[in-house]
Amino acid sequence: MSWQKLLFIVLILACLTPAVSPPIALALGLAVAFTFGNPFPQLEGKPTKYLLQISVVLLGFGMNLSSVYKAGKDGILFTIATIFGTLILGYFVGKFLKIGDKTSTLISSGTAICGGSAIAAVAPAIDAETDEITVSLGTVFVLNSAALFLFPIIGHYLGMTQSQFGIWSAVAIHDTSSVVGASSAYGPEALTIAATVKLARALWIAPVALLFAFIYRKQNSELKTKITIPWFILLFLAATAFRTYAPSSILPSLFDSLVNIAKTGMTITLFLIGASLSRTTLQKVGYWPLLQGVILWIVISLVSLWAAVNLL
Image (cartoon, rainbow, N blue to C red; front, side):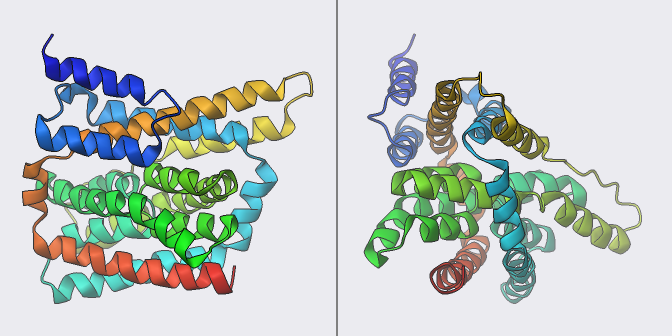
């Protein structure tokens, strides 16, 4: 076994310990990516995606169904406004920067809902090419990495409450994994609120994918579209319902153990995501798609920050 593989395994084992927080895990993954590269490329893609989804489902065992319902019900108008506001703004920014329609659509969708999961759902619906998907994922990933480090610092500087930070991070950070990473670094209440709000927003993946499938099919009648349903969100709701209505004979410590496993899984996921980034991906992203992503990210971050502090 090479020293690169051995070190990689040691770092994954380190992620199993409380000493490695989600931001540190991402930093370690990025260090691997930019030094010797991921020696286990087979762990990228679907394995990392499935680990993320399993971890999200297990987080459901630590939440109450009434809280999930309340988060979705109370914030539904804000959710609709931010999602479709981001999509509309993304359309005009993409046109102004002369970015390809499909790349612009994917970046806007990832920013509006939940990063890579939204991109993965919308891409087949609009028949996006591999390079367009890679550029979009790369753009979202770079901004996710920045948010994971910056958001807790900004939150503490502004003196945000746990609730305010949870809502803000859920709306303004793209991927669920980075939302969980940033909010868990801020505090346990922030984590619960952020995960709940983020997954409530993620329920909009299917409607948005269907909307774009309809739009692009009208533009091209020969386009064959396919919608990816985010089944893990339904399993998350099922886990939450089970925790809510579970018989008293089930020990709370069992649920606590499942939540701890979920948090560890998220930490490992962030390490693997960081290790999967490459210079090639950054080169493919280019300046204009990244600029579009940055503009959308700044706008939604400022709007959601103001709303979290003043309205919600």
